[in-house]
Length: 301
Picture: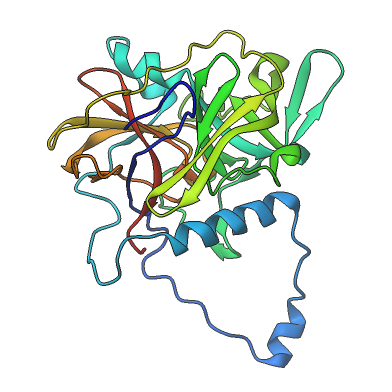
């Protein structure tokens, strides 16, 4: 992955796989009489942004006909509270990760805190999630992932945030599962919440798909992550992806490797366990602690 100080053009992408919910899922069309029993609910701003991101994600997936498992081997995703004390590389990276949300999902309490508007993960698109599914009933918020790359700069996927959406976009740090039974805090300090102030760079064309967003003030208590500025990642390098799949609390997936580095083409493939809400997640090298790319696309579900 390559970025320059002037343009902040992120030139890497990696393969995005999908989390199966309740396999197989089928959607039956309702007849007129049946449909009248279930009137359509108006979309919230959050629903609309999630739908936009999902549409873009589907459009950019890998070539059709490539048969890939949606979870590669073991499901290696872990919650924040499961990070071990000795995992210093992961600790240095995860503190910079945020979930991208709509401004309607955060309420200023006027006392130095914000209240988050969350929804429990029990359904997707109106279809129920299996109760046996990992992370069932955890809280969700937002529509994408991002990470801190400068004192007031956040990187994410280009299809997550652009200049049109900037005014209605916020970023929440520390949206973490606290334990097996305790979810993320709903009332959070203002130092965890930031608002889009402008787009430094945004590209969504060809193999490039990134946004670098300037937020309303310098981020407090968190350190920007190092990014690769020269050379390319190598096949077989161990990777960790940290983000918010289906906008769940932060997940760490460190069971992946680079499958196809593609030289200087500007993107690489990796066997990551991910889903649409992971769009914009950092993908870092576990050997070096350097961010190699932004997760932006993947195989068909």
